[in-house]
Image (cartoon, rainbow, N blue to C red):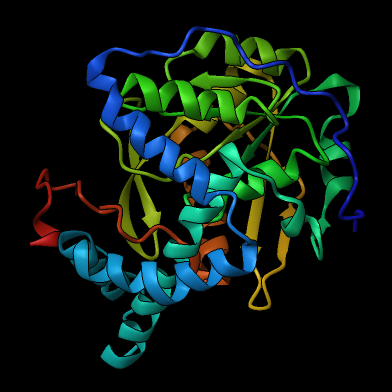
Length: 317
């Protein structure tokens, strides 16, 4: 276990200095960013209370369509739970999401000193072993409400770069990327394959969350909670082209407010010759993380939107 206040093992590169987009169409986004940056500076205890007691329940009511998606996902993934248990899990999930929005804002534009207190980091020795000989490492995780904050906390202990989906508005893209580059060594958009591969071939670490259904990128159907889920093969492709090792990164906000970050040993025999088998291994690892902290997963995403029979969205109707 590493000390909570350990400094970064390698200094992040300075943020890129592109000028911010200031066209009038960006002004509403800038207002939202300003509000979020101000909210990021509220006391952490107050943020947790607002997120859990006020914001989470408000989102559960306001985001009716997304609430129904989450309800359906929980029904599909936890058939062993009765309706009352699933409803309790749903309410807790939105409470965790309310807290998570403050965590995102803090990760990008605020301070994380309170989160470093009581931090537990496990498995750094697995990362060191995977990096022997200058080998790059792909660190895979899932879309949890804690992912952005915990990626920042892990950057105190390992020089992570990240791969991400660009934001739709220029202002949000500029502000979030600038915020991430305060702690990440680099950020690669999902279509920036060549620089990401170069980073891995030079022995870098690349954080990646390949667990969402997306229209872009090669994907295959593999099991997720016993159901076919359309899943990116990107982890297999990146490892095959770069020679990088692959390991899992789980992160949990504990009930008392502390965080546990855990790195697994590198997957054995990865990459194999089969993209489907490798993708199934990655998704099985992410499913294991979800089962450890089901209330903190992003259930509002339509994970089973595409199905092998070609029907889209039917499972959510």
